[in-house]
Image (cartoon, rainbow over all chains, first blue to last red; front, side, top):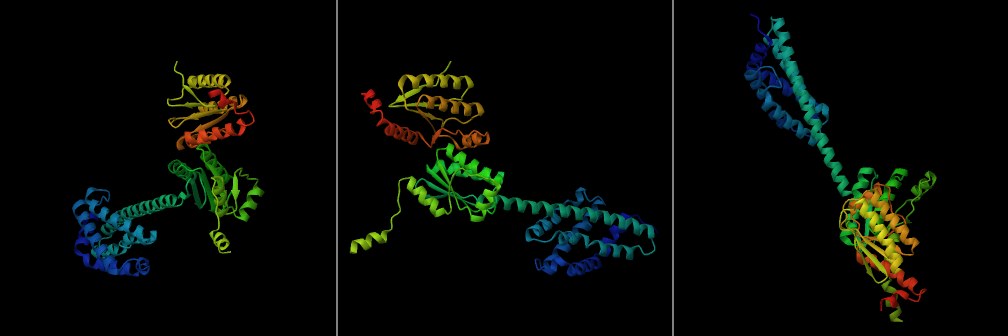
Length: 292
Length: 133
């Protein structure tokens, strides 16, 4: 008796469930995702069991179209699994292998089921392969999308964290820049600084570039733009924290910063205090003089 | 045609721009202002633009040319109260308004003009003070 591929596949999945699951578990156990220590065997087995039963239900009730509506619960649980893998930091291979490692056990079972029926075996292998490939690809898509989401969020967090505007004194702001300045960040930096100037009614803003690893013509241009915008708002800018090597590079490149610059933030702060009519006095000298 | 009023306060002229700057309005302001400086002998011009939300290159150039005309007539121009968004736009347009003093608000802008008048007033025998009385 010869059966079509779908029939063989349905029968195999229903009747040979235990053997397929055992083989799948064995193959998962040997896989790298377990060795990385990010997931326990028990959890992996639970996921495998759930996925398998959903796969069986989908194929038995719905047929072979992996994009069909009978596969929705399976696709959703696979998406959940790969999303959590992405967050836990699994490699793409580990994530894809979770689905692809099911292929071999199923093919084995199909071979056992259709021992004498070559054409039925070939058809069922083709059908099962098609479904599993589709599912594997979907898993990867979700995995990559989640990874990109994570990366995007991190980038946003870094951008927010790395542009704080600090109030050093009444009317004196500091902007410690950390990391490379690109156009997108310059925009954020500029907006933050200008808003802070308005909020704090600042007269002087100190831009500290100790944490900027390199200053090329582009970065210098971004800095100058920020300084110019602050000046338009009526605040003076002082650039501080230019390291000796960077100063040399800038001169060799012919980059000119036509702003007041100081070697350290402390120097710049002293200048800012002086400009706003303040002075730092050492208290100890006064007290020793009193004692005399 | 609407005109932007120019207020005289001591030796300073004050202009607050509270409407959308049309090109024609800007030209009229430049004319009025230069006439007023010449007539009153003002030493400073304060342009308050905190209500200005949209700038284009024409307005930027108008500010620069008002400042240039004022300087020829021996008055210093201070632009006060520029919004952050406006400042960013002007910088992106490449108009850094060099030669114009800027201040965060009217109070600081007036302080700049007053200190200039005080510095130079001594040389002139403080004539604008007597003028007021």
